Length: 148
Image (cartoon, rainbow, N blue to C red; front, top):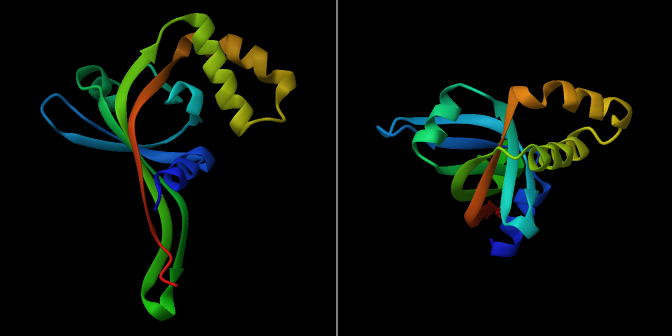
């Protein structure tokens, strides 16, 4: 798969499995929905203020995100057709309130584009209760099996 195709998998994806590791190297993976912003060479997601994922990223900022763009099991041939991408990078947390609001709006626009009438009130009510995590992208690679 070309690098451009891998970028498209990430751009069109809705969620991925974020992999982190503690400072002792204990692995942890969890599904997150995200927004990819090519101009920032970064992706963003929101998360709770505490938990294993947060602790790991604070101790060890190196992360990866695995995104499946398409999959189709072909049982009669005992194979799976798929497209996937892996993003590697470094995680950080956005603390500036204006930037945090900007990024949560991007996430809302991707996942709830028709909920404009309540969006601002919900954001205002909950903005202090979550982090916006930024992954500065170091690489995006992809893999595909079409088997045609």
